[in-house]
Length: 162
Image (cartoon, rainbow, N blue to C red; front, top):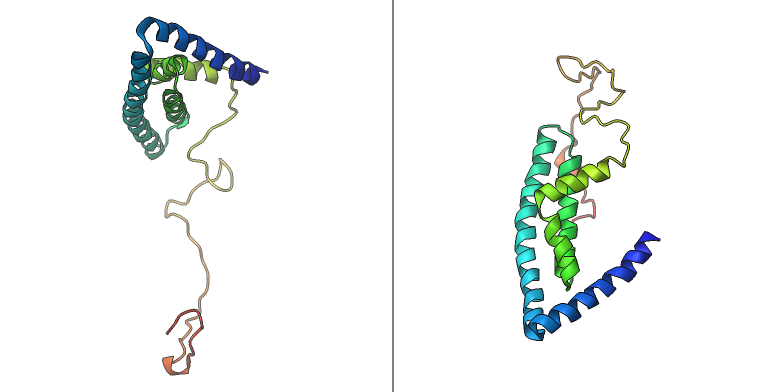
């Protein structure tokens, strides 16, 4: 139901804003503003996205919970889509999502509604209480050395042109 309301309300808000702002500043300035916000938004999204990608990589390298950097990256991606969509309302929301403090607030609000049971970046096969051998994984076994056939007896496999 909320999605239906959003698909109905957002275009109505955009049309209203286009009429009001276009009447106040004129058609040329309205169109120039829409194009300039798309260009500026693209530049900002690229810079913010690169920072978010660095934070995601850092969290994986440091074995930290990557949830927040991934959420920031998703919000930056969504803001890029909003900024490329012509309109003043979508541009306002898109620029708002590029503000790190707002993204942190939005993440905290969303996270409070989601219940994560467990997260362990260092989970081991065999369960969380598995003890590791200090020498690493040791696999014992027997081996038999196999001598390759002489090259003169081999025929082409048919997989290559040779």
